[in-house]
Each structure stands twice: as structure tokens, then as C-alpha cells.
Length: 397
View 1 (cartoon, helix red, strand yellow):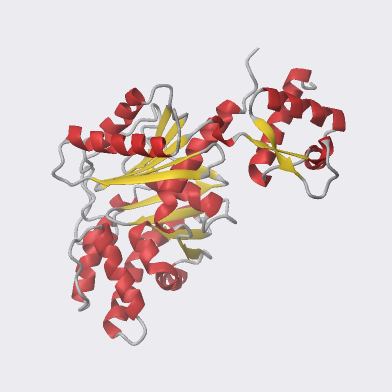
View 2 (cartoon, rainbow, N blue to C red; view 1 turned 60 degrees about the horizontal axis):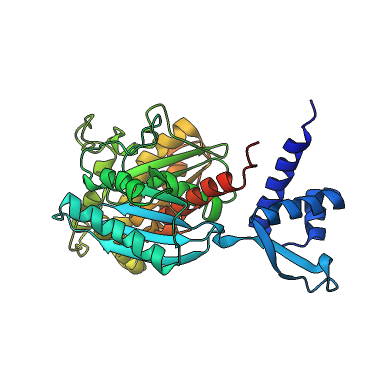
């Protein structure tokens, strides 16, 4: 059954908008060439999108003669402002962008473990409001939040998880109250990092891969056939609870001690460094573990202790990675989180060598391509997609 004229127009409009998003400003002639539409159809959609305030003339093409055919059309970037948050146990990182994803302002606020819940929420909200003001945003259209913990697949809310600060969940509802009209969404930080790696980072050429998150805690994100998989309860990737050899115990439903977390969580990494005779960082947290790994990578040439540490760490990581590979056969594992980033190509290469001896399934192991920005980039991409889906949708009739 052929599409109605109004449906066909809506499809053409969204196609043109996506091309302008991906390619940047284009002339009507370039839109005609890229869409395959007739000249009158392109003229009509340009008129509609201009009248709706979604696109405007942003310049002229140097390849054309002056006049209507030379006009370059681009998306009106300030039609909507977006915010992205990376919510961590020790603080919040914020950025504000326009509709095209160009970063206009950034802010961060450390939040100590002894900070009260109300004070922590106020500091985080103030950081968002400050960044929005700096960006010149009168209001925020969409806010994307990345946080540790499980997301309820039925409601989209951050579930109450043991070990996470109470202010994490309250922050989401407070932002919804304090930002009138804003669409606020929250997603697990590892899932957002995987989305960012898929779109902009180490997995751009892969539609199936696993991101292994190695930081203060341990997690994984699974992307199969281009789609992020969350599982029946939102718990896909809770690999810290995976029973593995070498821990001397089994994890419990409320405690991942004895699981994979006990091998490669931050505290375990710091202890391993000490056992190998390396300097011990000040704190057994994500940044501390990353410091130990980064120092070992820098000293690996000719330093036996550093070499022992990295080899032992790679052995441990490969134990968990091999289980994931055996079940999913993803073909590619990306090492993210503070420890994965600190280990870089050196640690990824060691894990790949171990994995090739443990599994018959060919698997690439790559370091994160986005460094410490992966969660923020994922939150921003999610916010931008949601805003564009709404703004680019045809008007209801």
C-alpha cells in the first residue's frame, strides 16, 4: 500500500534532516543528489523545514553561482539545548550542547562521601544550572544522565541499589522538578559508554561487541546486531557477580564479593600491585587502581615487577572475558573504565593473547577510544537522539 502524500512528506523531511545532521550544511542541489528526490520535492521540503524553524540559510556554496542554488541550508542548532551528566560516586560532570551536539559549556562538582543527601543534590543541580547559563540556554530541552546501577526496564528509573549514594536517585527526580519542560532520562553508565564507543570510539566498525568496564566496580555492556541489550530485569552485564575461579568464595545476591569483581575491581587491582612489589596508590578506588596500572605501563620496559603485575592482571581479566566470549561470541571486547583506559593498548594486547589461548573463538580486544569522556558522550548522544526524534517528527494533524 503506497504511502499517503503526508506520510511521504514526513519521511522525506526526516531524511533531509538526518543528512543535514550527518553531512553538515547542504545546498538544495546536494539534497536532491543525496536523497534522490525530484527538484520540486526538494524545494517543497526546504520550504516546509524553513517555515517550521528547523533549518535556515547558513551561507553560500563556493562551487555554485550566487543565487538560490548557492544557498547552504543547515539545522538551526540553537532550536534546543541539551545537557549530559556523568554521575559518579564522588561527584558529577556536566556538559551542555546545542541540537547538533556541539559542546557550549562544561562544569563539574566533587561530592565527598560525607556530604548529606540534600546538599549533594543541590550541588549537582547547581552545576547543571551554571553550565546552562554559561551556554546561554534559557531552558534545557533534554537531559541525559549516566549513573552506576541498574535501570528498571519497565519504568526507565534508576533502581535503588546497595552501595550507591542515596542522592543518585533523588537527583533524577529533582532535575525533573527543577527543569520545567525538560525530558530527563537516565541510563547505566556502562551502557552509555558502549553506545559512545559504537558511534564515535573503538567499536565504530562493529555492530556486535562487548564493553568490559574496569573501574571502581566491574560491569559490561552488550551490543548485538547494533542494538544494546538490557535483559529482562535490566541486569545484562552485571559481570561483577560472575562466579570465577581464584576468589575462594561465591558471590551473593546482594554482594559481589567472591565474583569477578573480587579479581579485577579497583581494590583487587591495588592489592595485586602491592603483591608484585609496585608502589601502592593512596586510595584503593577507581582512580587509584588506574594510577597503579598507568605507572606499570610506563615502566613495563625493563621493569620486572611492572611486567609481572600487568601479566597477572591480564590473566584475571581474561577469566571474565572468556566467559562472556563463550556465551555471546561478540568478536570484539573493548576495555573501558579507568583501569581499561589506563592499560591502553598494552593491557588490551596482553588480554587478547590470554584470551586466544583460552577460547577457540576469534576475538579482538581493543582499548577504549574515548578515554574518560565515554559516559558523557553517550549521555549526550542519547539526549540528542531523543530531542531530534521529537523535534524532527511530523506535526500531528
